[in-house]
Image 1 (cartoon, rainbow, N blue to C red):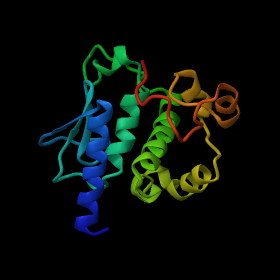
Image 2 (cartoon, one colour):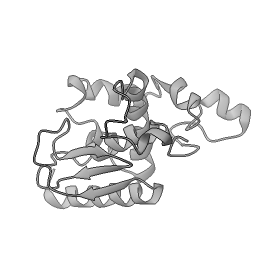
Image 3 (cartoon, rainbow, N blue to C red):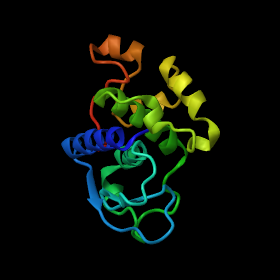
Length: 169
């Protein structure tokens, strides 16, 4: 990926995140972070552009914020946050959320699901998602963000990967 493509993708992602109310705060990150150049904070993503390796990681990290209850989002990174966060369903929810986001803003799945992430399962994830096998969809329905195709038809609403809303209450 060349620098101009990367810049365009970062701009698209940042614009989208701003539009839906997820703040991205640019700052130097000196410690080790789970995702290079990114860290989650209260209601925000901290981004160190000099250390960030993959623009799509912004969407995945935003997915973690989006599927977290609003009352807990403001406590991320503080001692008040419950220690089990993120829980099991949160990861699949963040994956599905980031897939919906990338389809919404029109970037390739490979930008988010890159070969150096997802425990060497990025290619499998892309194939699965592109085949409309949405593992974890009941979680997104349960938290009110999206509907599977049968339920969407029944309710006259858009089906995933269209979202009913982008942030969990």
